[in-house]
Image (cartoon, rainbow, N blue to C red; front, side, top):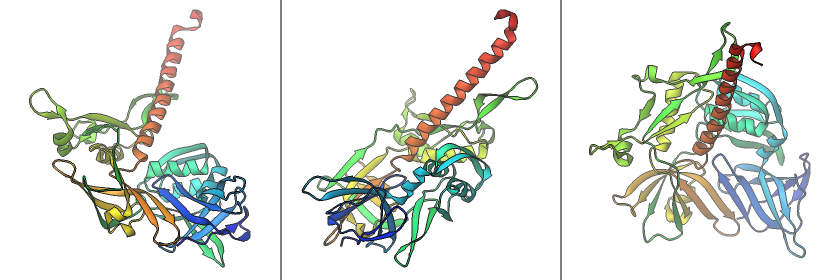
Length: 390
């Protein structure tokens, strides 16, 4: 059934109940969208808050109205985002995080906000990054990228209103669900997408650019070659997957199969052991085609209990030999109304956004560092010429 939507003003003052016309659509995805959409007769104001209890698991959820469409003579359409969106209005001027745990980093990102640090299950290693002139939500996403983990908003409710707002950072949302999905030629209500991402069976890993020092040992601000991990990896600055090479490798010219090489950059990593570990983790998501399946929950055996982040078994019998995959629910769309909810799942063999996004960020940071290095070299060459050349 459709959830009851409790309406609050921008300052958490209770306004009453907002009746929805028809179903309420809840869309959520890993590292991205968490929205509700519905029609109603009286449009709420922008910035007002919706508090509702999920009928599936009894968890309280809070969303903020960000847009309304109000046609004359027809119900208004409301679009609301997770209350984490309020972090867009909190600003982190500068936070230099050096040798910090995930809990300490999360606390720094949330410091200018009214949100508290919740349960943190991200890896316990100490790491660092610079949060500089960013909003608190961007800072939170940066923490996820550097320390790992997948943030989720948690609201506590007492006496009919939100009493506490916290951000949990589990290492990974969801669990093994035991559900099974079989993709074949006779299956309806399913779309399979083989994503365009390249398949690499081996990856070079590069870390932080090493700083350039002048003759007095003072950093110039430029960078030279990047950190590698060959010294702790038998001389090889790359890691590979031989099973993936046999399946997806390229011809080596001698009747065998060679690795398909790619590279990944972690611009903040200054430890070769951590760099190797991060590269191995990146390889795991790069050494097979990235496939997603959009399915109605009825097509998944045991799919009614699948939550965001859960793993399911996928048998793709349209391939020869058939693919046996462990896929993850990376997106869930539910129509909450009268009767059983209509649920559509996106099952992906890899998260939809994280790998490409981090690669794009790394590329942009690398370009900045290399530009700085070139500028430093240019300045040095002018100094060598002497003032009489100008």
